[in-house]
Image (cartoon, rainbow, N blue to C red):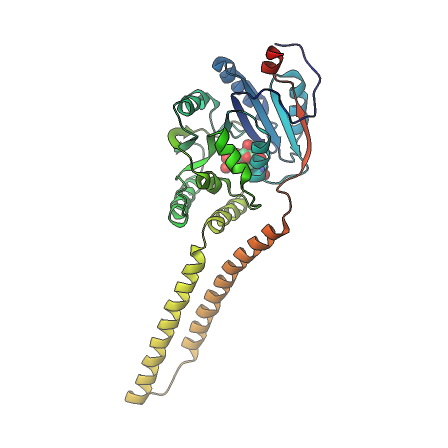
Length: 332
Ligand code: UDP
Ligand code: MG
């Protein structure tokens, strides 16, 4: 290994590596040693210039300190510490703004995305793909309800979005330099990365893989966070739900008119007294509920506009630690 050089605080590299590996980290202390070890093995065998960028998303379990210590003792490591927990989407965006490789691969720290697939992804990129999207063939170690809800959600998203979002494909993927630059140009603050990856387009190769169970630690996504992300995905990429509520309004109004006509005819022709209290309550509750749902949905879109209008930065960087790249030393 090379002699240790002092850690620098600069984001600039004089020579771009071929490959950047981007890993968002939030409370992953249990898995980080294994992650770095397995990545190290793969990258050493690859023999191409590389950098590993960890984005610490406000971890509170010592992950950042552990990584900071390793930046000093490893080559080609970069640690971007965010000022607090901004969420995985923001952490990935931060990493994409700081990576300088010709190709960038996004990996989860928990080794659910096997680093051993990196050589195959690079080969697909060298064969001409700008994006190598990794599609899950299976998801070992995840409960059936998570698999089912993920399956249904990806299908729904596929129907809603104009840019086709490939099903069962998470954030594990390779992006060419120009795809990364395109993503960095997108100004929106509510970032649903799976949708943004699809939106930028570029020649895409899909590769299948078996998603491994978490190597250690626990998932950071509870069902509430997943639901919020799902809603985010749907409302960030389509206004079709708004059209659906207008359609629903038209259907209920027509049904209400028909029912009114039916009652009027029954009363006039058959002379039956109008007995409407229970049905009135039922109809009013249904309509009230439908209106509130539509209002909530509209509110979701208005809220998004409000957040975008504030123009706040997507994340704040606390500091950047960087070990001088070995390939740069070789060239100087
Ligand atoms: N993560 C993050 N910020 C968060 C939540 C998660 O950077 O607020 C990272 C986490 O450290 C991991 C990746 O995102 O590297 C995926 O998270 P996790 O494995 O918990 O999600 P799951 O695989 O269960 O969907
Ligand atoms: Mg995971």
